[in-house]
Length: 327
Ligand SMILES: *[C@@H]1O[C@H](CO)[C@@H](O)[C@H](O)[C@H]1NC(C)=O
Ligand SMILES: *[C@@H]1O[C@H](CO)[C@@H](O)[C@H](O)[C@H]1NC(C)=O
Ligand SMILES: *[C@@H]1O[C@H](CO)[C@@H](O)[C@H](O)[C@H]1NC(C)=O
Ligand SMILES: *[C@@H]1O[C@H](CO)[C@@H](O)[C@H](O)[C@H]1NC(C)=O
Ligand SMILES: *[C@@H]1O[C@H](CO)[C@@H](O)[C@H](O)[C@H]1NC(C)=O
Image 1 (cartoon, rainbow, N blue to C red):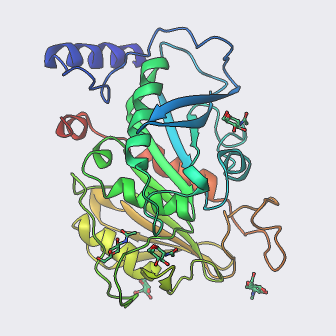
Image 2: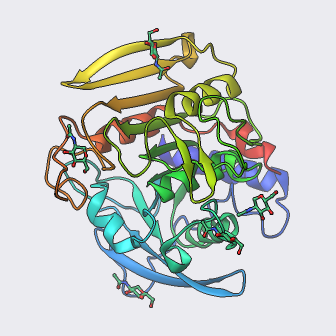
């Protein structure tokens, strides 16, 4: 079935006569040997030029990788003042307990921040497109299963990607954790602030995690760095509205102190989801100690975010039509 999929995309790509440079639906990397020195189950450190700057990302090659099998890829963006290396330690996406079959890509922000954070002028949308072009050229990546997650400012950047015309049809689903979703307005009404967003499709799968005791990016939102953070309920309801879903949610307990709010109905049930843990702080939710929950005043969570993210991604690949819309 998988080789049929390769054949299908190859035929499709050929039939379309792809414009030069358009690699988003290519399977160019399939059947290629891994770059020199790289192997399945290892992490490579790759430097590329983007926007005239030398930039790097880490890429974890799944232990089960075979170059004839189109393989999912997850972009995972570090928090502000953190690094690609620290995000790899934090997100558990490379832990064999949770994931053995997706690539995980850890881009590094300039000065450890991302586009979308107040006063950051770097083009990280371009950097992300350049990374995807590069990895799709080298590895057999399934163009319908490219996903994005991240923490804090990196989660905010996931929203920048989801709101971008091009990237919203190249990345299938988004799962930001403890996100800082800055809006540049002078006054800040956190429950009603208009959130600029221009995705190219209206069925974007979006899952956000937030702690009720987040003292960095408050659940209730408010002014920060001279810009405005929307309250998380307002922010997530705006995603439901953008996807044409009712603002009514189905509330399900996940573990002690933690509930999931799902929006949508029928085939779209759960297209937009928010997981709220009332008692944790500005943390990547994990039942194991990590760099976030071991900070003084913090504690482990009653659930793991990572398998929920992976399951959400599994449920929400892009359709070929979404990819074509990008052209
Ligand atoms: C990856 O390469 C960059 C740039 O050369 C370097 O700063 C960083 O420390 C390297 N990280 C790892 C894990 O090797
Ligand atoms: C925020 O908006 C102000 C006023 O429109 C503008 O001058 C400023 O450059 C914007 N800041 C950023 C980071 O885009
Ligand atoms: C952003 O830049 C403006 C203009 O240089 C400055 O006034 C403002 O304090 C900066 N904001 C932050 C959050 O650093
Ligand atoms: C979900 O619905 C419940 C019940 O109507 C409501 O109390 C809660 O605030 C909603 N959650 C969000 C995030 O809107
Ligand atoms: C909330 O977080 C703060 C700051 O990390 C911590 O000092 C406080 O003990 C936490 N409160 C609860 C109820 O966990």
